[in-house]
Image 1 (spheres, rainbow, N blue to C red):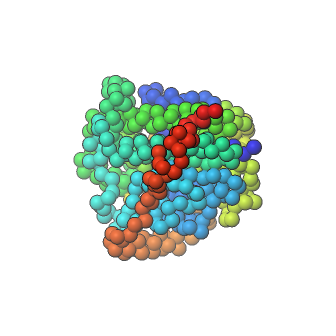
Image 2: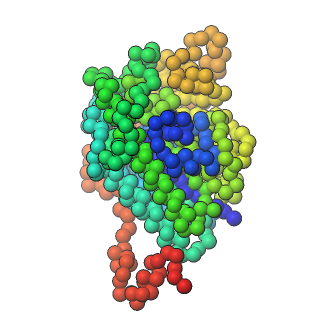
Image 3: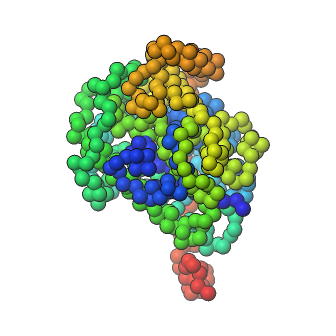
Length: 499
């Protein structure tokens, strides 16, 4: 029997800030419950530390360079199949609630239903410019976002996540009302705890401010690298760095937002119980990337350091053996994994080559591939940036920047760059050769910059373009209408149905 699949995705959630990954302060009991019954991946990564490229890689099982997923204003081509296409082909009913950061006129990419609009615009405005990487754009992050952290009653992130949670629960109840035995995929993608770091007072009150932990590594603790320095300059944390107290307030709000997100996840799990779906539903919980949250004086994402590049990944459900895995895996592995869970061989079904590999071996007590390849083509660089994580070592290479090599098992805070250590010269040379031989660097750079030039040219003329998804809403078919006797409508709206 094919299981239902509930994919829950958070935004900008670093696993280091979850109790299931060892954080001593943050409260997330529903995620803890999920972790206790499933497989927790302790070395899961995104394939690009930025929202849209990361999500497109996850949905297609392909690395960003293979699908032209350069940055947050890149289109995912409609001719690239996603896991929604494949699962629909396997008989699944597919629905998306929340963010997926689709750019362009295709706002479904294989989903049969979309329950909400997206939280972010779907046009080309958020295009970086490698011709002028120091250019500060008005849509870009800055430290005002951090300094404004704290309490609010409403904000765009809360408005959005309330809608996402409500629409998702209603879809589950409506699906249960049909009595259909067809399997389904529901992707529920929240925006929290993404900046701005704002939370309702009752969630802030769950934490004593004196308990909020400061960053483990300050900028004074490490030898700076060029990409990190460019990132700080891009969001202006080099001009007037945020203070220690401003950092603690932002982290307090981030923790509160995690608790808010955890409550929404708890509601979804309760809905699975109430609809009878729980026993035949696999839950996949992850994020698109992490958040530096003040570590090394850095914020947000766009870096290959652990807080930015790692993601939580927990998979629980029927036939899955609870445990933890230290193997390096990534979001491109999710497409072949969900197809495997649905009873299909991704290698046979996929219409394109896949860089991902099924995680099923990890789900039944074994081990699988221990490898992550990462690519970055967005802000604060003028050249492609690459990351290879294998055998506990993480290698980072960007043309014009010194290489970085960290033993992230022995040195999880990445304090000791081994790239110049003679004992690791063989590893560095092998990784350099792997990246050199795997990519035509100049051709790839020209391709990125040509895409940027096209989109930067078109962006100002797109003011009247309406690509943002409009959720369908049939008011004539909602609630009580004169289409059937009132008692029959009320009976049909009830769950469970009366006899």
